[in-house]
Structures are given as structure tokens and as C-alpha cells.
Image (cartoon, rainbow, N blue to C red; front, top):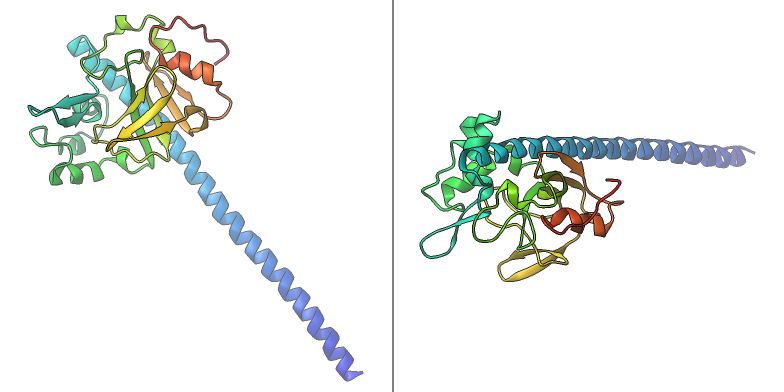
Length: 240
């Protein structure tokens, strides 16, 4: 009988221990998942706010120069020297950004000089896990060579995407690299390689030429996204 009671006691202890371990493990996982979700929501909120600041800065640039900035500034040898994101530092500072951080950037040096790389690391736009990319192409809001003006958006500024803030694409704030629209699809071209990008599967937001910011991701039809990318396609967009 004593052995039987000890055996039962061991079983009970094992069951209690297993239940306790399950509860603790489940609790820990729930806490971790909760933290991850909070970080995700905060990241989305920050990205939305960042795009709003960028929209204000781009509009201020347009007011000053009667056009939006070029996507890339090239040096005398035809190599990328600055990104449009770097070009709007003065405007970002004036609309409420961290002027000291933006002032760290040296326009006389290439975007990836040691100093400018350090300046990028001090910029909160570079530490949020999202990349901010223009859409470049003959039919898009940005053209490879030259600048666009408000009057170029025949579909309306409220129907044309200027830039997107999306995750899982690692493009630095100062890096002169953006999305290319070939008339049908979006590509990220870098170092001679082309990576397709599907905004309907990308978590983030789009900045429109009128300064508004709207959510991207699942549920936005491909035809709607294409209509928003083209600046003078004449498409009708409803319900978004």
C-alpha cells in the first residue's frame, strides 16, 4: 500500500508540475507576443507620423522650388550622390523634425561617407524598421531624371502615391535607392539585381501627393494600387 500511495503521489506531482509548467510557459509566450504586438502597433503609428512629416516637408520644398525634389542627385561622374530623403532635411527641420540630427548630414560628402553613415544612425527614421521609398517611373510620381510639379498629377494629388513606408525592405534613409514602376509591377533595383515588391502584401502606409497618409496591406486590390501609382492614368478609384 505504501508503494502504491507513493506511486500515486508521484503521478499527482508530475501532473501538477506539468500543468504548472504549461501555465507558466503559456503566460510567458502570451507576454512575449503581447510585447511584440505592442511594438508592431507603435512601429506602424510612428511610420504613419513620419510619412505625415515627410509630406509636409515635400510640400514645403515644392513651395520653395515649384517642384518636388528629384529622387536622386548625381555627381559629375554620374554616380548617385544624394537621395531625395537627404535633400529634404532642411524642410524636415523646419516642419518640426530634429534639426540637430538633420544638420549632421554633410551635403559636400557622398551619402555613404563615414560621417553621413553615422548621421543616418542618429536619425530616428533609420531605426524604426521601416524603409521610406519613392516610386519612380515615367508613369509614376517621380521621374528618374528631373522633377515633377503638382500640375503633372493629372489623376489628382489625392489619387497619386508619392512615397511608401514599408517593412522587410532594408533601404537606408540616405541611400539613393527607391521603387521602380515599369508600368505593370514594382521593383527594387540595387547592385544590378531586381527584387519584385507587392504593396498589397506589404505592411505599412502610403503618402499621397496631397499629403494624406493611408494604410497599405492585405485588402487593397492590385488594380487600385496601380491606379494610385500612376499620376495620369485616368483610372477610376472607388472605396479606398
